[in-house]
Image (cartoon, rainbow, N blue to C red; front, side, top):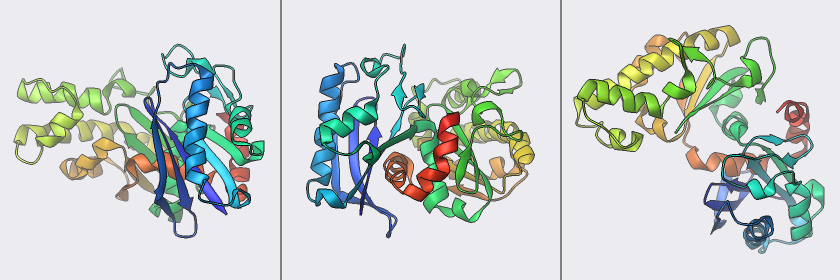
Amino acid sequence: MIQVGMDIGGSHFMVCHYKVRDQKLILDSRSTCSVNPNWEAERILGVWSEAISKTISSYVLSNVLGAGMAIPGPSDYYEEIIQIKGVNKYECLYDMNVKNELATWLEMDVSQVRFINDASVFAIAVSMIGKVKSFDRCLAITLGTGLIASFIVNRKPVFSDPLVPKGGFLYDQSIDGVKAGELFPTKGLLYLYYQVSREFAANALEIYQLATDYIKVRETFQLCSRDLGRFLAPFIEEFGAEFLVLGGNISNAFENFKEQLIAELPIAEIHLSGMMDQADLISGALLMGDEYFGELSDLIEEM
């Protein structure tokens, strides 16, 4: 059976077939289209549906198990109602059951369309097919513009547990009186780079590209990873995590901060995920597995 994953970006929409048996995306099936998140709802749904149809058109429809996607919050994931408002993107979908709408557009049964919080997709992907699946308790961190964390127990993200912060979030936790989301990783890197070099950088990528031959950049990464390690350490210890997995664009610079980060943590098991921007597609497709989706049902109600 065909399982399809969808990736909703601020300016794009991507669909791809995921082959569960081989644990890989079939990139030849990938369909990508440009989207303006401020279009009217009907136009957005039409473009999404066209991309999905293009990906599944080479398969017999009866062999298509369905399509899963990661939806940005806030949303009511249990009732499957979009509640995005005040962020200047996809507000036209507010109070809409996108699952029902897409099923209608695609002439599918509503059970063939599923979605989940986009903050959980990295954790789902790495815990199902990555090295994390061999461990009972793990922490997955996405280092991008902001800090996205997922505490994982037996291959499932955890949102309410006495051993994890409320909602499983770390961005709103503090270190040295500052919210982690204001420090890690991008804002902290830019600030530390200026403190070390007295030079301004436009973004984290600019700093990363200098890392191989500029000692002040390596010092910047080491200082940032020291603070990140100090911040993560008590949560890892309290949760009893056996393994830390890193994703996101900034994790590409791992070699520049690995030793300092490990030195601050109570565990030595750190894995760099190679999924990067494929996590949304993979986790979306995995939602179409009835057994795993059933295991997630209680968690979805908590999102």
